[in-house]
Length: 390
Image (tube, rainbow, N blue to C red):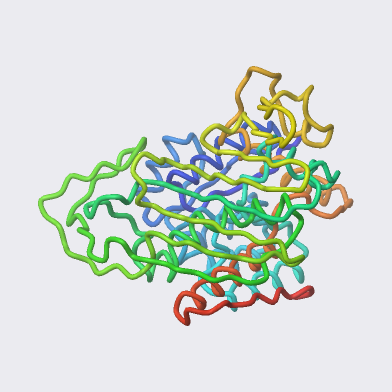
């Protein structure tokens, strides 16, 4: 079987994760990667066992062998890299955010539609088997009428003033950080499982650490970033470390969520609870194989991930039997599987509605983040109007 040939632009942590995920599918070959200079590109290509290395992404896009682009660059590069990829008639899997502004993301949606290329945005948390289970439970009215949604996404990797990353710089990461970086995942999951859009927000954001110490010299290892510095440069930070957002879903259901990248001990805790007139459910990404089900007049339940216990549609997203945990690398694989099945179908002159997040979802999240920023600045409720056709 001829494999689909893909190229990687940006070979950091998430780029490496993309490579590992698509290789597990058995139908994809990463044939080239691009980095900011030839020395780094050669190093990453050797580490990832990728045959071709380019010192800029334009050269990779000129490679006729490459059919699909994985855009894993820092946020400020997303728009230009994805736009150039579409114009080169490549299918695109992009990291989020889709762009730096809603105007840019709207342009990418339009360009992708005109080109007819498969386009995907990495909101992969949808692909946890128990998240899929919650969606189907809500569709089957097992929770009854959903009347409240609440939760948080908490991390601690920016707790200290010496914690530094390009995301804290507005020019590189964007005007919003905690909301756009991790809050976007939380909002996507909630909108996915409920089938409802967030239409109004009231936000309260804060930069907990307004001055951070940027190392004047750094050393990056393949496994992780190690900072070895002879000094620090004080940097003014304006994007948020923390935020809480009240919201309304389009049917009037109420909700609230908190995001934080300065919560000690919380490594990557995306947590939600959904309250219905019959049942409540709660799920925690740090314990992804457990779903809490709350009852009023019966004992509460703990559903462990097991394909035999899940709804049939949800069981499709569990590749391993009960007692065999599935976590982040597995959901990224399932996301890639959905994308590449669509690409294979298109190569065989078939098409069907995508069952994965597309650039439209990425654009909708840009509009949501824009409304949250507006609400925080004006101290008022801010509405979101989603375009039905772009």
